[in-house]
Amino acid sequence: MRALISGGAGFIGRHLATELRLQGHDLIALDLLSPQVHREPEAARAGFPGRMVVGDVCDADAWARCRDADVVIHLAAETGTGQSMYQQDRYRQVNVEGTRLAAREAARRGVPLVAISSRAVYGEGARVEADGTRTYDGVVRPGSRAADSREDDPHAPVSVYGETKSEGEQVIAAELGDRGSATVIRPQNVIGAGQALHNPYTGVLAAFLACLKEGRAISVYGDGAQTRDFVHVTDLTAMISWAVANPAPAADGPRIINCGSGVRTTLRELADHAVAASLSAPVDIVHVDVHRAGDIRDACADLTRARELGAPSPRWCAADAVADFVRTSWDQPGARADAWDRALDELRDRGLTS
Image (cartoon, rainbow, N blue to C red; front, side, top):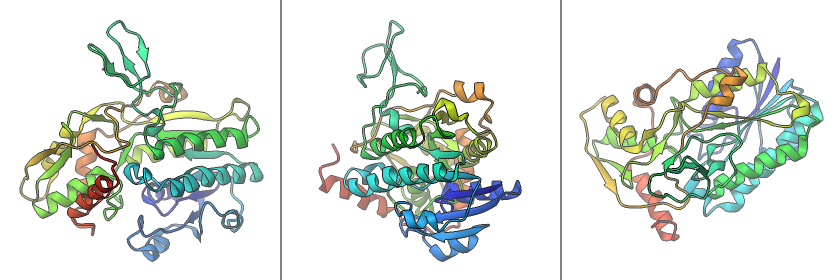
């Protein structure tokens, strides 16, 4: 099988390409090789195990330069939640219009589409009230608790990034409808070796790693009780690979599947896991009383649908995934810890913190 992967040279793309190549697939990547994502663009290009087309997913001519494929896998996206709040046009162009062109390309070729969305479409997500009812207004009432997000929950994004991923799902449905096969995967927080350690706009673990390497205290924003669902990148690529091998029925419209560990981890626990995995002396963990625009309180995936469809179950727990990230990334070059301080200052200067 020939697979066309947008964003194929990126963090998730490199892991997916390795897996698909081992399965014997021929690969083509369409990637802009953006410096914000790729510290060494030429090395990323050379390291892709297939043909590389350097181009923008928002450019129809770039898609046309990619040779025929049997499946289109759309990974390319702008992913910084905070950055999206002030670079709105750029995020909408890449995440909405780029996705539109990916769907059109799949339709033009008559092949399945597998696209990566985000848990950010749920926003604050559902809560279960004291009386057992499920609510979606984001209000925390006495006796209520955060509920795991289901694929049929309403979209309620609280960031521009989330809005663009929601709109991206809508354009897939509009472009393909019931005429083409589409699987949309909504990952939770993805971690693993190969993340862009120099990019201060995504990935809290990269910030933690920079602090550990410099012997500096780790900063946890807020009270640290916020919860996230951390999924190892190989668990996500296993699901993508499964979706490639098991395309969605065309007549049913886009098939939506959550991807996560299904387990909540607090940000304080995440920091503890990072310190425990450190290859140098332990550091302190401090709390910074700040809320960034677009941040949410709780997130976790309901994996019922994935299990019912027979998709691969997650193999990594959060502690092991964090340890793997820290140990495999320790000797890799990255930004200094104060890069995240400057990114926070950017948000403050723009009135995007409270």
